[in-house]
Length: 221
Image 1: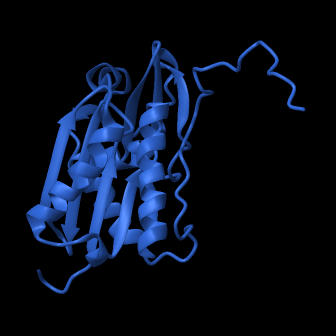
Image 2: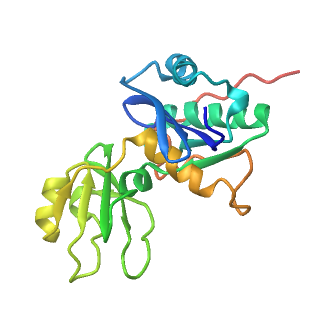
């Protein structure tokens, strides 16, 4: 293996489990499996399989990139917890990357990214706009915040063709698979001293679906 930074990227924030290993600018191993449940059991074996393909161990890694959502609450917690644990145990930098910026990564010019939030809602964010990136938002599909008038954005992600027709833009495919985009962004940010060292934070834009129990718990004597 060349003497280059080795960055592991992984994500379980949506209906998949995805892992990629980056050596310098090259992806040396990657795996992706669609799944709506079971990511907790699948993630670590998939990480080990990717490392084995490259014939390296966890101690050879230079940094970790992890998908922080927005997305499925359970999936986000799985990957963020794994990244925190690995970073703490290995003494590495763990870099959180949002699902929206992973979608936009590699596309030039204004980009409108959209992730399905279910219940007729979406997560969206505008990137590479002349006025700077917008904030990630949760909204109805019909209320998506659009780029500045006069721009012709690329639209990537959920409902891309419908949104592209509304804004006069063009629907595009993402440039990089999700885990590879996360690994590349983490590699670019691994030396940023303003980032937390081992504690990437989940990006939650909506309250949890589960409600607290109505019954009062027993009194402990």
